[in-house]
Image (cartoon, one colour):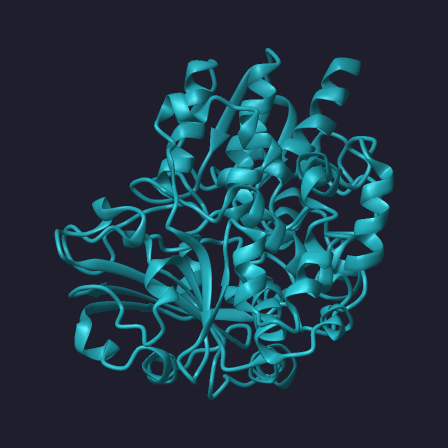
Length: 469
């Protein structure tokens, strides 16, 4: 009998398996698809030689993850590559704000009236970042806070809506940059703890940047899998699990799946019926004949570029997709240009380009024209650089990754109490009604992103049980 079986070979499932195997437990992973990766994959989606990330591409939470930093993933081929700027946000008038490794450079790009306010916002937390991020990403009660005072101060700043936090800024560049940071998790700007979301992304950039993985996001999954195999763990692909009886006998079962799928497989009935999924995304991967022709200079040096004219436009786009049930006419776009840091991703002189906008859950329309009109506002001539494109709306996104229900890449709405308490109102969110069954997907704290911390936290709960039995 195995000690643990993990269902799902995404970053969280693989991390949970590694953490258990490191402690001497026998582990096997079962993945429904014929390749591993989940939200961290790399494929040739457009033309030969153009390596795209179908899901996540830039990894501010990955490089800052306490779980990943404790593992020897560099020995298994994971290499973080940095653009000169982690992120840039161009404006319609040709200017741009930046999120730089340097707090000073970032503050200066926001204008003289907000430079000081930005410094006062981030500088108190930066010296405590490593402890803060461990406390923040280990909550709830998987570990006692190492610095409860700093965590409490962070909570006072971050728990209110982001619109409260941005009142300290006087001009639009700072408000717009911060609104874009919040929108990375598709949360309405007025939601609970959205200030914390934006602040975490900003601090992550200042601490260690927003890198890409050399060769693509698949490198993260491949490194985890190779380490797991060296620890004696096994991975079985092309193995769909429809019920618990499909799995070999084990002392514990850990699911890197959506709560909906887990309830169906384990026979939990309506246990997770209150869990809500958020809006979907419409994603386009481009093969380009050269760099994106940004009007502003700063985006040409950035790995990630946010696209939204101002904070009101971003807020409207989020509200339309999440609450009004319609696709935005001017979508907020998150874009990643991996080739700025990693020229191996495309043939010489060419580029891969990654972008998505928010749309209602399950939306079946085509947002291509709206996306490209937005890009042309800030990069005139963009369409002339397009060699090929691969589009994916919510149905295709969900087909790529079953955890993305309705195209929701956050694996659950990041709004209301569910921002902090997911997938159920529980102090032990990784446990389920079955004492031997656990959940470790992004539907559990600390939530979405390629960081492995949900798997790490769930593994803690599992190994404590295994040691007691």
